[in-house]
Length: 304
Image 1 (cartoon, rainbow, N blue to C red):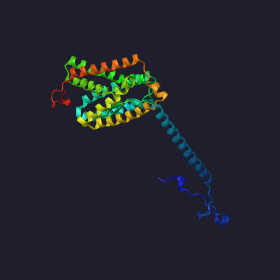
Image 2 (cartoon, rainbow, N blue to C red; image 1 turned 180 degrees about the vertical axis):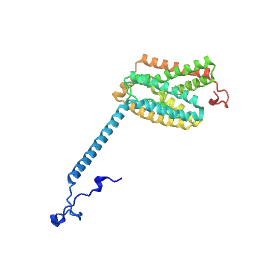
Image 3 (cartoon, helix red, strand yellow; image 1 turned 30 degrees about the vertical axis):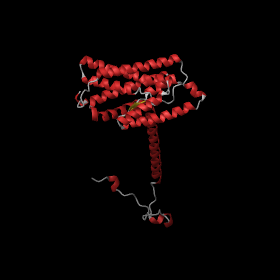
Image 4 (cartoon, rainbow, N blue to C red; image 1 turned 90 degrees about the vertical axis):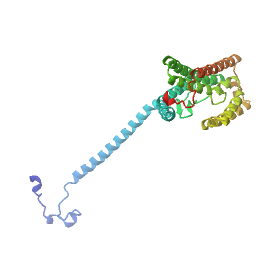
């Protein structure tokens, strides 16, 4: 079907009415360009559309930035959850899914002991971050105000970690579950290992308020363990411990007023820290003895 408006041609203007030099370039029929106003309107519309698109793009950009800013407070939660998931995946390759989940939960309980005490000390710290086969870590933004505060932070982790392992043992005894007994055993062991008197382990932080010279004893024990039972993870701890020991001892040898003030602890506070330290060791050793079920080298956590 034809369109009547398109089938009727527009009346042509005789060429002789216009000088040849006034004919538009590229118009052999001598017609005047009657669509110039429409072209200008089209150009303005295109420019306006482009500007509107730019404004919309900028608005979306700032909306995205606002979304990121609003998510920043949740970054710590995402970091903890993400690293915990990676650790569960790694441990599950050796111990099975359920034991890996329980193990990571016990690590989290231990680290939350540090986080709670750091907040009580007024020290800013990172969220717990899990490192497969290395445990977990909480990074302090600054040191506590003195060695006594550092000792409290160091012991808070094993204290809460011991409670978590004891809870697993209670459940294991109540339900006669070897799974929870094994979980309790590994929890007791890890907290006991952390009480070795060498920085950056928790026991080394406790020694800062009691007897810093014990750092050398703890370092000797670590070296002996590495020589007797070579292990890459233990070797990393030995290297970190040696570096931290050297740095701290050099600072103490400086004899500065700030160093003297940091390590100045009242005798009764030293006794209190020592009592908690020894009580933790006894409780953890007894817990390991009571929860020990791995009597055979063929025992596997997968079967629990």
